[in-house]
Length: 109
Image (cartoon, rainbow, N blue to C red; front, top):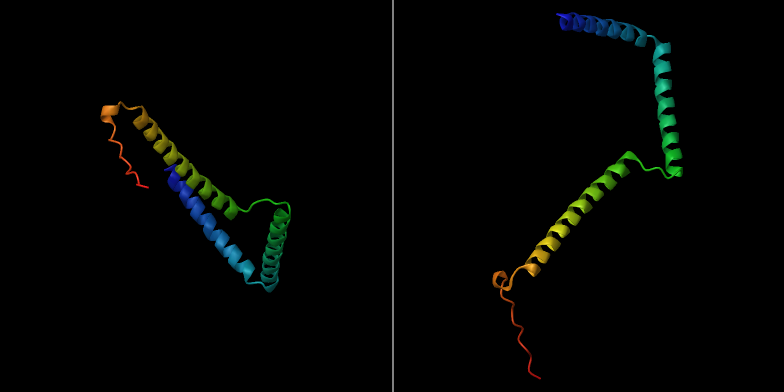
């Protein structure tokens, strides 16, 4: 019941917001102000990105790439550890369970 009432209040609030914002955006002065704010925001974003680059701060995409590379390297290390453990186990295994060693043919001089 409380959720239903809250849902109705939210729905009504969204309708009012849509109406008010629609009426505001019909005014040319408000449209210009919104456009100017968007242009200003994009300029601030650009300058902020430049400042971060100058400070040698990595971007989100660079962090994602590094994370992917680290995960790949972690998998390779795990595989190598597994291979080393298997090789160590084979080395320590009794002679009877080991695969027979191959004989290398000697070349005649």
